[in-house]
Image (cartoon, rainbow, N blue to C red):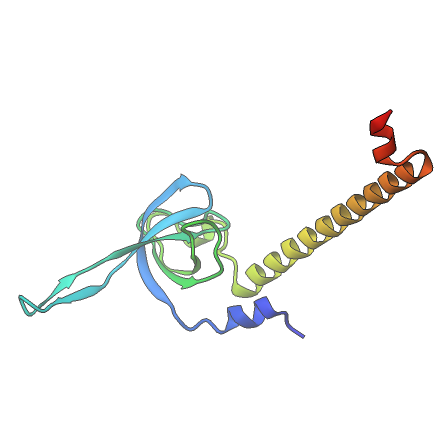
Length: 152
């Protein structure tokens, strides 16, 4: 049975196409400009209204000028909410010479693996805290109580 993360990720139908404006300045992050239009009621005219998105690029496989397809994903950082789906038209070097863009299944598997590691670390930390609390209680009960020790 698939996890909740996998089910949620597969429901994505929203896909945007844009041009990579900035690549290589941030680790695993590119800036993608997605075109759009906005209607002005006063002038009765459409105006260009492009938007820039910070996009997660796990393998740093994008270069400035690439035309890419991006999809919304889980939040990676404060401003990153999208992830690269695939490269539509590369600019400069061919796609074969670059690291591959991970598929949805690979991204889900990586996220679940990291979550499992985090859960293990939390469980280990929780057990060590409980053990230290038990030891403190035993040491306090062994001799005088903490209040009686403070008076002496």
